[in-house]
Length: 228
Length: 228
DNA sequence: CTCCGATGCATTGTATACAATAGAGGGATG
DNA sequence: CATCCCTCTATTGTATACAATGCATCGGAG
Image (cartoon, rainbow over all chains, first blue to last red; front, side):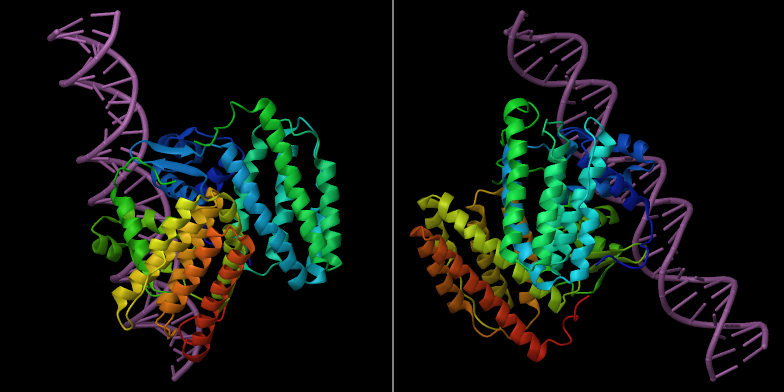
């Protein structure tokens, strides 16, 4: 699925990757203006690659564009959070059913290496690495469907959802829980039990959503919009 | 859902819309190189807006980009067709269930105006208009879910699928069939019968897919790639 | 004091100039 | 005759110059 030839590097591509990373991790806060010249300095290019990166991110739903006003890191609303998890529930619970039907045992076994993520609290890099590994796990499952369209849609969605976890909410300590959920899912996949796998995924997604929603209710009233 | 204020017009936005339309209707054949200067002439701008439009379409999966080689209207493969319809089946059959739960009677009633599309064979503009109206019907249903994330994903997917219908395949005469299917779906929605609505959608999508796949098998071996 | 409009500045939108790359074609060499 | 390499050209990638727009500021009118 990933291109075997090393893609030619362009500044535009580098800026896109860097800017996307920074938007996903909220290095650019939701709603913050992305000034072309500032970004050009930050990423070491001229305005042109910055603009191309912004346009791509706009199309991904990570950036808003207002003509003659500028680009802005997309705001996060409770509506977006609710909608995103609802969509993810549909897509991913179906994805695992397809994975059960189509993945090889070897592919499923590889998941185990991605299922053991942990992090130490109050340690941002560790937390970011944990989220990254968790995302890789889910993307690996999505890839196993063999459906590239589904994979790409789910990948983009999961990336957008990543942002919610960087809001600085107190989500409690969910490393251990997530690890158990991953192990249960991997087991269900290996057992070729689609319904059990789907159930795992549904629980996991609801659990993530509930953690965020609960934390939002308590402390996040000012962090996110109410969904215009 | 659509912004009430008239968005400022920029050349970049105009080119994006025009180029997208032309890619969707295969005015640019799958695989055809999109030369920046040519497009700039065609759409009456300089290369900059063309490049921005290409970047956006790249992110939508309608255009491929190869650094220092150029942009290309994305090729169509049987794999993409199969994957797209499989994904659409999941998304849209779930969407109608949500629509049943959340849409108002008035919204559903508005569907009737979009359900009566017809076309005359061998008449390209009529055919294009028919497909357009059909798409609007499905987008209206997607909108009724109230889930913007789902709507946008489904909209992009349905747009990509539109391309398949411009391949020039002999799909038979499906105007009447589609109209009946739309009426059945509208009725199911009004009756608030989610399962019946989902069944309608599944049948409709399978029917479309089968028409295309069957026609491809007969005449389209050279029109599309075999995957990868 | 408030409101309104003009003016200036910061920022984005667009065009163009220049640099880098890919690919084709041709000529020398074995 | 095949092969390699060089050059030349078409095309894209990037930087920069200029135009258009939005916004804040300031000054005057009421």
